[in-house]
Image (cartoon, rainbow, N blue to C red; front, side):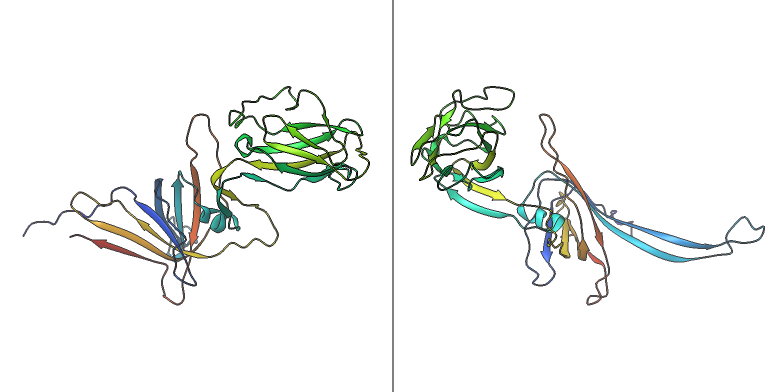
Length: 291
């Protein structure tokens, strides 16, 4: 009888976290650079006197960590690692325009003396970004955009100065008057009374173009909750058909890097801590199958 072939691990296939309360999968990560289960323990040494070596060594604690290096950002990552589940809206055939709100002062957005509404008039011209309305006089405003990344959508436009202004001439706001913003698909409608904007005051709104999917998440609330979760790490299937996975019964992670690098796909590294599951009397389980 000869020695058997060595058992080896090769590659990474998936990382699939699941709810500890229902067992349902949150989803899966497939665009992985790496995933690993790291176990490191402490040995407690008894030293004393002139002896250079320990008199005794006993077992200390073991730290169990899951390291993930991935290149995709499914919604559940924000829920598990940042404490807030995103909201997703599908098929916005008319785009999306947030409600305009005052930022500095209160004169800009007003049903009577300011701008009563900011509405979509040409959905195909909507351009992604955050927009600022600034009063120039009692009856005119300028518009500013956070970015020109989407300015070739619909009618081509451009930023006009270093302050990110988008209108060449001041936009007039008249009583009950609708004023289209050329090439941007939006209209500013004046209030029902005498327009009395205060120069220098500002308001803001957000624009999303026609989309198949729009996802938003606001991070950092004092009520955000970081759930415990279970997870399965699945290795790549080898040429001989061997299969392996590691199931971690109870783990937790905090933090999610969001990296933007020049001409490169974003890559994030996250470390989750695994800990003892009393119900299963275990921390994790390894399965290996050789067909």
